[in-house]
Image 1: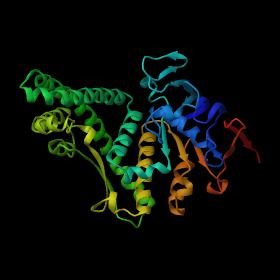
Image 2 (image 1 turned 60 degrees about the horizontal axis):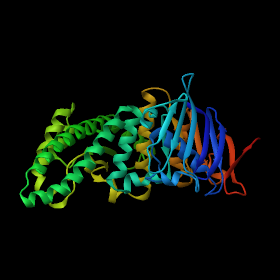
Image 3 (image 1 turned 30 degrees about the vertical axis):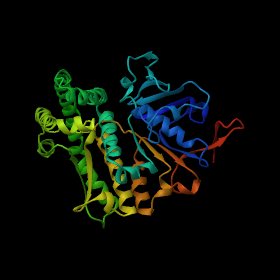
Length: 386
């Protein structure tokens, strides 16, 4: 798979960009702040409907503009697909496939399969559980776009149930049982949707685990072995996740039982204490958790292992995903650079950003594009020809 064309309108620093791409390696070189990362960010957003830099859509829209537009043409096994995405802050995104509008932007998921390496990846190891949950959910959605709907359904139930908990706490004090009966109904919805989301994550972790172990061994052969496992806040769910054939039905029963046990605590605090939104992907080096015990180098190796594992899993299931390397070579020592170069050498398309040309492997045969700035503070590109 490769992206043949990228068009941006009012996306970040780009008022307008029309870029023709090709298979192989393309390097965007330019000082920080000139817009090179915005190019790979736009592609990553088209792949996942999320940014690797910010959690909201508003910063993606150029100052003074009402919306941003990202248009791509992707080629997969000889077939072209046009993907257009309109981003508007505070409103649902609009999307088109082959110029035809779709009901939900989620329908473009899976059209562009990509794996991104970025300096922000250290948060996968050192950050809070939300970073690791997002990693799992983005990858699960890339593999199976229907997971996006599961996640959206769960998030909707979670918001509604949280609002109900706040009102039910007062109703309980007044002796009004109707709110508590309604809460029982929403417990069932949360358990049903939550069990499906957990099942998707657990299935993914089971496939990723051996790939992470192999990738870490490649990156740090002298270090302790790396391992991953799904950690749930519900003991019964975690026990079921550890079995060879986890059951959605068992997950659902486990969630319902835990919701009943935590009912008083939830009413007292007014928050949902049970569900996959409180789970984590545990990363271990030897017998120690990576978070808090891994050195800086080990943390980078662990983070890279997660991305390498994702890449190998996706390519084993179909065509090569597009490989996006956002200013990571400057962060890596020679051993980790070599490991990443080895993966990139066989990828169908690699898009790389770098602040200086010296950050790029010297033996790479790559198309090089210099990213600069116009007088109006918008970006400009100029190709370097040998």
